[in-house]
Each structure stands twice: as C-alpha cells, then as structure tokens.
Length: 494
Image: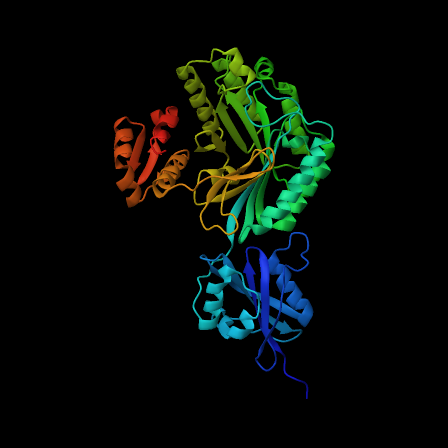
C-alpha cells in the first residue's frame, strides 16, 4: 500500500523586496524551513515568484499561490502558497493558518527591526490586512542627450560627447539595480523615457536598460511603455530593439508642420521629415502614437495653426498634446526677448485646436492633452493624481514615492552628479492643496472631501465668484475662463 499524498504549506515572508524566510511543515506537522535571501531570480521574475519556484523545485511539487497578506505599517507581506505532489489534489492554504510557526523557530532568524510586528502577528495569530494586487508604480527615466538644444528648451540636456552615452547607460543600469528592488511591493504600470531625446539611445542600449528594469521589478501585463522620439533623431534599424524592449507607445515631437515655425524653434526636422518619421513608426507596428504640438509662437497665424492641426489629425494618431510656447530663463529665445502673440490670440488657437480635436472624436482629458477613447496617457495621469506614486531615474528626473525605510512619501530628484536629493514632506494642508490643484488640470475636475471644503472654502468661493470654477456635487472644475487663467486658479491652493 502506497503512502498518502504529502500536503505541504509554505509562507514566504518578504521585506522590501527581499525574501526573509520560507517555512513549511513536515509530515509530522512540525515547522521546518529554508532561508531565501532573494534566490537566483530569472529575468522579469519577482522575488515572490522566485521563492515559490524554489519551493516547487525542492519539493518536486506543483505550487498554487493563494494570495497576499500585507502589513501597511511595516511594508512586509506574506505570500501564502500551497503545494501538492504530482497527481494529488491540493488543499489551498488559508491565511489564518500561517500562525502555525512557533515563536522560537521564527525568532531564530535574525529579524530586522521592522519585523517585530510581523513576528508578533505570526505568534499571536493577529489578522493582518490583505491587499492584492500590489500597488502600481510609474517609472520615469530621463535621457539627458539631444542632437542640439532647441532655442526654447530649458530642460537639462546636451549633445553627447565621446563615450558619454555608454557611461550614462552603465550608470543608469547600476541605479536601476540599486533602487528598484528596494521599492516595497510595487509593480510597474507605466514606464516613460523622456529627455532630452531618448530616441538617440542606440537600440541595443535601450534594450539593456529595459531588461535591467524587468529584472528588478515586475511589469504589469498591460504596461504602457513610452519613448519620446525626435523625427530627426532615430534610425529605423533601432525600431526592432524598441519593440523587443517592450516600447509600445511613442511620443513624437512634431511641434509644427510649418517649416518656418520649425526653423524658428530650432528644430532639426522639417514637416516632410515629421510625416516620414510617423509613417516609419506605423510601418514598424507601433499602434499607439502621441504627437506633440506648440502654439502661441511668434509669427504663427490662425491659418498656419489650423493647417498644422488638421494635417496631424489626418494622420490619425491616438493622442495629441499641445502646449503654448513659454519663454524660459536662460534660453536663447529668452535672450532675444521675442514678441509673443497676445493672450487673446493664444487662447483663440487653443480653443480652435480643441474644436478640431473634438470633431475627430478626440476627448480632452486634461488641459493640454487629448486622446481617442482608451488611449489616455497612463503615465502622465499618474502625475495628476497624488494617490499614485512615480519614481524618476536619471540626472534630471523627479520622484514622488516611498523610499526604503520611510513611511511618508517624499519628493526627490537625482541631480546631474547622480546624487539623490529628497525634500521635506508636505504638511497636511499642503498635501490637500496639491491634490486639488493637480486635479484641476483634469477635464473631469477633482472630487473634494468635507475636509477640503472646510480648509479651502474661501478659495473656492472666491474662484466661483470670479467664474473660474464650478462646484457641483463636490466636484470642483475649471470653467472655460478658468482654463484660460488656469495658473491663477490653481495657485490659490498652493
């Protein structure tokens, strides 16, 4: 008579991306276990998946995950799994049964200070809150290189020298490997390569960067992965590497389809090259393309602006962003002190673009962004929602997320010398105000709470009296006039 199937339960204790301990019962019901300091993870494999795989390989058993128990206080989670031998029926592990671990067995492991609460929970059978799936994270990667700085550009960027791109890629990958695994229980829902001109990166270099990201943190199956591209700064032979890297959205910097306007801005492409670049992307299978435009330019006319927008719409892109030219300090344009169109003229161009976009089925979901249904920029939307966190890597990137060993979200950026700079967290009122003014950028407005009303009632009343906002059903929205004076309206909450 053969022995009955062996049923095994295992609990994986994970802290800030590291597997601390994996425990199981033997045939007599006594706890035994292994330590997993991270294991040998495969490309794109999470720490938890690695631990489950290692348990499976040791037991020669099929593993069935049963969910996550997560403690928000300590950023520690338990991943419950049940195992069965080949051919037997599994009995799923219940989270309540994780407390079978004996105190002396658990504490024989050298626990970190934050593990005390978890040890207490396991010992005393305290219920821990469970959440699934993990919290989403947006990742921004700054590429500080361009062929030539445009006359209006104030971003940190410059033409690369000698082997500077190679050195940057090596430094960036090192930063990815050191920071991303420390992000507690995140999975990436969007990745955005901004610049500078990210399309300047050789295709194989971009692939290496994306592979490093995938090895460090899990990507959601439907991830949005955007690459900014300049029509004059990419090679068709690199596009296969882009697709292999997981790039599925392109933001193409067209800016204008009038050659005189492009020349004035200092762009390196002309209108024909912009269209050729777009068609090349389509030919190579990119099905989500966003086009960037600029209005409010010196010498720009209503007619030239209308022709540009209509021509772009005839290409049938999925997304269009359009921004008014601003003269930034220290730029060549600022030194010339150009005569810009009047505010009335600039807003006439803005509303004309919105009208043309609406006629073609585009939805304005933010002050300067329009998209076809289901093609809203997931990454940019994270910037306008303070409930969502984003991590920035690269010398000109900013972050808003929880860093290791910190329970409060801090703003941070990495300076050109790759030094991580964090700023003080906002106080309670500043956080509420930020949520409101960022939310006002969205066409749907922002939903206010009774607390918001109590603190900002005077600002809301003043803006409503000036007809810059409407406030109905607890939703605060900019009016048409409010959109034209958006900076003034949003400044009331800073």
